[in-house]
Image (cartoon, rainbow, N blue to C red; front, side, top):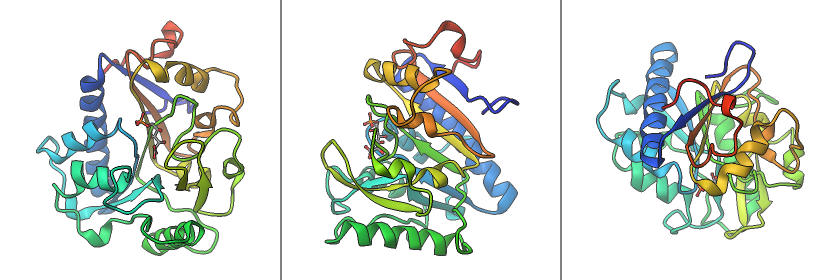
Length: 259
Ligand code: 6PG
């Protein structure tokens, strides 16, 4: 987790499988701690390919055991496609995890990608989170664990370089037009992601190494590398990398805690 100065912790695993093992162990401990402390755990799940192995490992029995009936899941972002579409983040998480553990369906919040109006879907998703968290007006949902990935361009969730949503400070979720397909998406905004108690950014593969190095450099432009703006206000930030994704980091950037 972040160190005392609030600097991110960087954990480097040898390869994608070791990364998934390390990430699953950290998430499993985080879920157990949240349930012990507050009787429930609110997870914001990442999309894309990287987290699939983590979800599969979480679905398997492990230590500590997880009382999934106390887990609530939502998504950091979603492609605006139907929930059974091969590009749906919900479909991926459902197959890898949610259909394999007893999380009550009423505790899984997703973007209605099957609807016709992406702006309305973003508003509805934000409203469903506000209700689920019992928010007062203007408050942000505080996830216990926020899982994120990073694109080779330095985006995270669907917060892409040089897009207006990077500066959204009022809405919980927003509709965006991404420079990749599927282009229509809904994303949580930075205030929500940075409200997380424990934020974990996963990166695997050599193609991510330049963006990881830009993200962790002392100086840089968050509009060009949006993941730089992931700076939890009070929570912890942990980067979970495999060796290929960490390859462009200066030698001391990785903690001794190599996973
Ligand atoms: C998405 C994700 C996105 C993803 C990165 C990395 O909907 O695509 O939320 O932010 O985390 O693009 O994707 P990979 O893990 O597939 O490399």
